[in-house]
Length: 245
Ligand SMILES: Nc1ncnc2c1ncn2[C@@H]1O[C@H](COP(=O)(O)OP(=O)(O)OP(=O)(O)O)[C@@H](O)[C@H]1O
Ligand SMILES: [Mg+2]
Image (cartoon, rainbow, N blue to C red; front, side, top):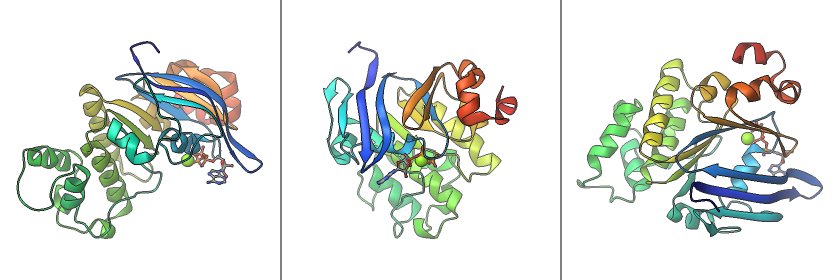
């Protein structure tokens, strides 16, 4: 493994009965980069994230994170090593307030002050969560709940974040805030891997885009090259290619 590789996926296949959701995927992601993962519905993007983040053991292949073999390691073990993912739908602690949820994610006691408190306040302000800080997470509008899920992932102190469709259902203002916060965590040294169908949002953010179709990688490179690749246009972009280019 070269020193700059943070995550290495080798010959990973994930089968569900007769369905091959991920097919012999080989990828190496560089530390400190923002990478995109795109492709049509059902391409296997979420399954690949589930496999990498320990929610499924791969049927075949190995996963190395920070030069350790983590194949089949449980999600909480990976989180402790610094690899944290968010979910396609929002997943929060519904009964905790926004602030309590963020403290829990940061492993802080729910009452009293701490050194991390200013950081939590900053994240709440940056993501527009401040005005909801005393609201139970379960009662938030869905876009806000999604932002809270991302804020919680950031609060864990992860060194690599896997974000599954973070932009879905967000307002223009929330999208701009989210782009800014992803750039901020990236600048702080965190490696980010993002699944997204909103290509305007994604392509302004990533230095590399990987395209999955039917479980296999069909393109991988600079966003401008990938969006012009005829295979990608045919499998995924169609007429959308004009809007992205
Ligand atoms: N737990 C599971 N059991 C059985 N089949 C599954 C499971 N999870 C995913 N699949 C199947 O694997 C394939 C890939 O699904 P996946 O959710 O990974 O796609 P995706 O690229 O994330 O799609 P989308 O863009 O719609 O979120 C689909 O055929 C899906 O039905
Ligand atoms: Mg998905």
